[in-house]
Image 1 (cartoon, rainbow, N blue to C red):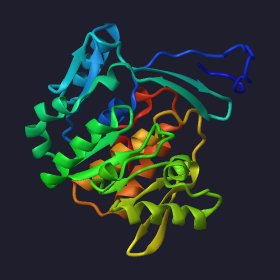
Image 2: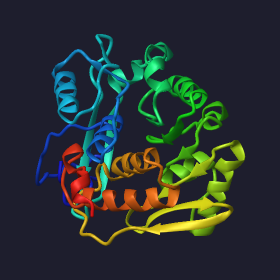
Image 3: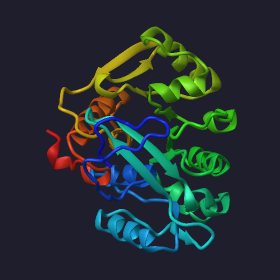
Length: 286
């Protein structure tokens, strides 16, 4: 729903545009990986409803392997309600639905697939114990494990998960919440990054919206600036960044080059309305 300004508590406002679009962080990131040139497989869970059928059909059209995208009658498919204001900023409410039914047993069923992966990308719309199991299997098979810690839980993340993560990709708010460091500037952001590294995370790449992204390489901070564009909707920008980053890593790029490619891909996403429909194709990135 497009709005001029976000409503205050108890306030009813008039919207100025409505769109229904495929989404979900995992699905968005899978589509980004596929559109940007990677062989992509999606492990997840859907309900037994029309939303599920639409999702499966759409992912197949994008060339995503859905052989381990299963369905359950225990819960409806996950959904999100998104408000986008006149400045292109968004506010999102997610109902996990069937995503919460993904179990370690589902990961075991996909173990052969995981063993062949060069990069395993995960998000927090599925249960943490399941992600921890997947990260452990991926690490054992030699894959690069990338975690986008969103939506960030209020209770933090267990060390058992983080120590199996090679690259953590939070935004600034998520970095602050999960590290416990009050992020006010670049200096405190670096403190947050070091906190994660002390736990055992190999690399931390923090997305900073229009400013770009920041990491630390060989003890030195690296800022990769964003590209100047006119943003109309920031939905799926972070997901595009994560997908693009993983595509380049899977192709042998170093982290800095992968970040530059990811920033460019994300900058195109924010110039368009919608979630998956806003994600660019490789041919659009010069």
